[in-house]
Image (cartoon, rainbow, N blue to C red):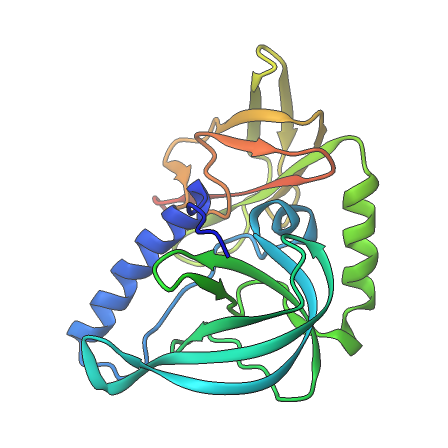
Length: 246
């Protein structure tokens, strides 16, 4: 399987997860702690960002030792039979890794799953976490419908939330300005509802987003970076802003 470069969002997520992991290890933790991006992943975003979406069945597994500390387990490698590929290379069998961290997604042997996986260039294999939309296939009927909708849609969506860092509650009445970069010049304005959410239908393209409220900035772990993100055909941009001041 050819190696692939990590996406911009995957690189940004990895950077912040590494910071959190380091802080936890310094504090003497045993199991690595990872944090998922916000807002919570949706099919319209995951379809674009994940490298492999497929229906698989795990047939075996093995523990992967930590190369820097052989006494510890870095994660688990699952050998899977691939029944159907919805996005990615046409494969019949392969390996999928999940890290020994709080975002691990262990597979049960003999169970069918719909998996959303990213390519881990360091391990040269697919990786799955519980931050993705992976789930047992028996529970994936609605997700499968959403995938088909994304594949046939013509336009895109930008949505997200503005919250207070102190409480993580939404802030109503905040104006969110979205400006297209490619194609250039188009501006759209949305106002957050009582839960702090905003929603805009937009053409596919590259965008930046900003808010008009003092003390509000892009959240470090926003699913997409408001300072520059792409909305693919049928896809969506997911943004989170946070107010630092009371």
